[in-house]
Length: 400
Length: 237
Ligand SMILES: Nc1ncnc2c1ncn2[C@@H]1O[C@H](COP(=O)(O)OP(=O)(O)O)[C@@H](O)[C@H]1O
Ligand SMILES: [Mg+2]
Image (cartoon, rainbow over the protein chains, first blue to last red):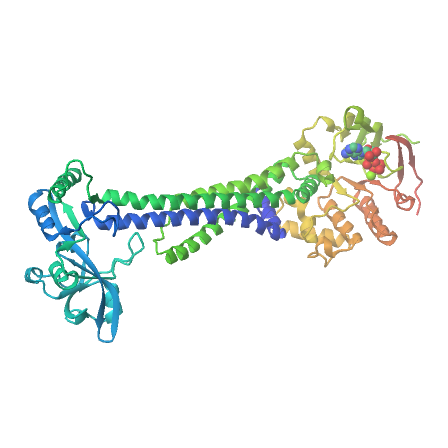
């Protein structure tokens, strides 16, 4: 009986191809929309999480002013000596990398490129999880004497040297020539969408002397020793900076001390809103898909009722008719669900590529939206049929 | 009026059927008594609205009576469950309707095979029986045509093939020629008469047309929900 009923169901699907396709389409839209939205939301979150993980969990960033980012208020910059004080006076501090930055044009032979030079110490590479693709970092003499040497980010290498090896070459920045001693491994975009590889790194002293012309430092990046409390390190750091910047007890801080967790919170807050919006769009799609299925089923209910009447008249049992319609609904809905999953996977990969976020296949959401949309298909396919199959055959035949 | 045979295949006693309730209630059958013996060919005639179809549907277990008793081969049908009545339809009854009632967009062969699917026949059995039935109604070669591609007479012959593929004991035909012209009506009637004559299938047929009733050996007239007359005719050519 099951086999024969399966044949009947498949025949009915084939016979009413248009109706079948429209029903499937409803499920496809529902499933594909939900999976795509959630997958993209997850991808965005993951991309932010990865950014944060790449910063390391024990990172502490000290910037002047109270805002997050450059140009926040007119608070005075730090001095190189501030970084030294942090290194020497706070026991739980491991690395300290004072940094100052300047926009410049870098020239190599016929190529030139507008980028940023960061002046800092070797600690900067370690604290920022930078790795070398070629060459080396600064020697002690180079840092102390402020030699004109530099380490290039991948994007700068690409603009000036193409795929060629830059180590040993000389580039020109402003009026001076600078020897390339190293090349950094590519990191890609930051969580804020900036190209982290579009950078040139030089010894702090070189940049201060030749580019900024002051002892100022825009930012101090530090790390806490493994096992040390981030909180108490921050407290000690804040106290030290207040003292060095002569801030009286009644005044507010004119600098900010942030750790990785705070930065993470700022960033994930943004993606959470994004994910919520996507979720709402997905829910609407699901609803639209469901209404589509319902419409098709209700439109065809007259024809199907008569068909059920015919089947009952020529000897079908109520159970057999119901089983057939149930199989029909299940086959259509799950086929639609599978197509939806495939469409969602393809769509997510493409869109994730465009948005520059990773594609993550998540089984739970695939399964969940599949089950949900299929259930809508089965419910709206099966229940009208059940009502018809419970009629007296003659009533079903007369239905109009 | 000759007395009916001792053990009729179909025996109706005091069958009534009321549609609707309360003030809107309408009694379509007002106590019908009818015996039909195995192998008979009965034509049911009467004015429109006299309850012919209602009676046929009750005999065919497509509808249930409001009161009265209906014995099929000694079994009290009015006491059977829905499922048992469905099994009775499946195993003993064949239907031909005025409106053909074929499945749309479905080939002639698949339409004819349908009752066998519900009987659990194998695919090869179904195909050969389906082809044989179509051949029997003169539609060999039309297996793959859908109802939309067939004339009215051909559609009714497909319906007839579907009705007889299970070799039913009783063929119930409600105005089978009502939608057909006189020439195709004759073709269909010849087939029905042959089924009765050659295969011993009991035939109950509703018709308005005296020409079609001439094929039957007994004519029952309905008027106003009751049997008004019941004639057995002498055998004629
Ligand atoms: N489902 C129904 N609901 C209400 N009235 C019905 C129904 N079926 C038939 N009738 C009424 O019962 C009477 C007999 O109908 P029917 O048996 O179809 O007559 P006919 O002899 O023309 O076949 C008619 O008056 C018809 O209007
Ligand atoms: Mg009628």
